[in-house]
Image (cartoon, rainbow, N blue to C red; front, side, top):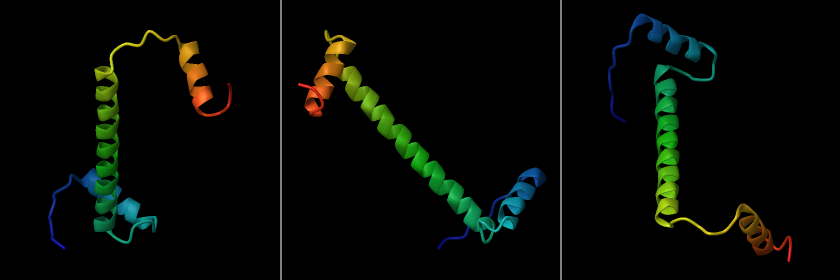
Length: 81
């Protein structure tokens, strides 16, 4: 595992110390690793959502009404014939 030293303003260091004092994190490194994991997950979700938006935009505009779409979705789900 690599080591990284960072500098924080006092209020941020106090925040990190407070988070570790709750017992949820064993030390500041655990807290920072958790923040990084969460940020990685968030960015992956944003990228996935952007991919879905891009696909939808490439699909063009539908002539179907919302009711048409609802009926088709229910039919495909086997909830209505």
